[in-house]
Length: 425
Image (cartoon, rainbow, N blue to C red; front, side, top):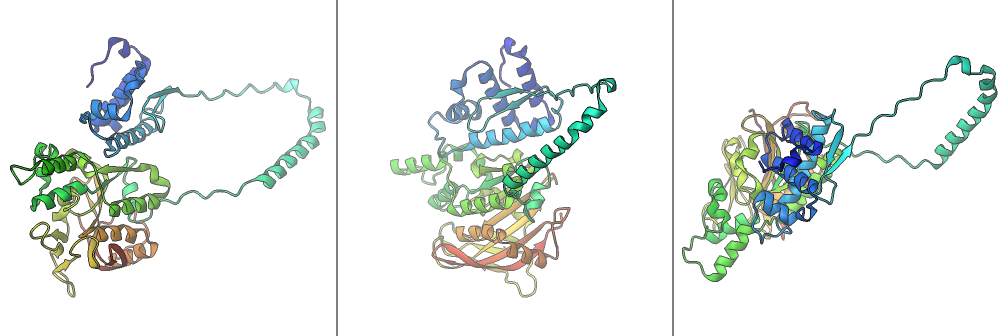
């Protein structure tokens, strides 16, 4: 917790900040508590020059001084989540507060707004001061005025704008599980590039290690100056794929009236404790998004590969059913033509305190196809039929589906369902 000047502790606005950070919506998010305290402290001290995105990243999240806010969106992501948490507090525990804390969009200053009091209706006139005959004289004129106003409103009324629809199945299972954000974790292309350079896999533990994040992961113990520059760039930048952008765009469109609850994060920003609770969408396979490997042992269709960069990746069908293949092999590399495969999986967190949707393809074409598949109402209906469910179930129905797409020069099309499984937690 940051050191606070005694004068600040006597400020009722800071006391409100302390009540907010001590509330249940903030108990499991130390980063959001630190972020809110930093923004409020600088605002109350008039030090708004410190509230730039770059300075916040360095001061609150420990980013290096030369980091790029263009390539690293973590500050924007966390501020977006902070706004949601503030709404959650003032809609719940803080609904009786006399002031509201807001962070206006497009800024990082903290706004303290007094809650407007409801107007007290004026006391009714005593009966002895009213004249019934006068009311009868005015009644025709009042009715005529009411008719005139109603006619004008009907004449000039604009067509009603239809409200966005709620998220359809299976996204509804994520949005219905709570009021917090649905975190979309996109692939880390630099992680995939590092694997190819080293020609060996990188485990999730290695990915989270300080050595990986400092760029000390080259298999070559004596890298050239060029190799060292490339490694430093790969370890310090946040890049994702075109396929992931297509998936994110599809998810935003499907989210409808819950779109504001989507929070986009890079795989690089996630930590194991983040998976203790919440709802997530993981985009990519274990070879591009290492967090997907965290759930592989819960799935029937599991991604495998031989020598990194040389062998074709494939899905292993752990328990084949009649008519199914034991393995499904995809494209040789992204950008080629042929068949690629992907899986769409919905499963619970290990402790049951959240759900995870995984969209993973053997290549980028497969991942893109998985997102486009969910974006089509006919495909979603066919998937429900194959799983034996209908409508939007009140409780999550966990499943996995293997789909096949025919890719032509890097573009997926002609997607079909190959096999499905229900997952019983």
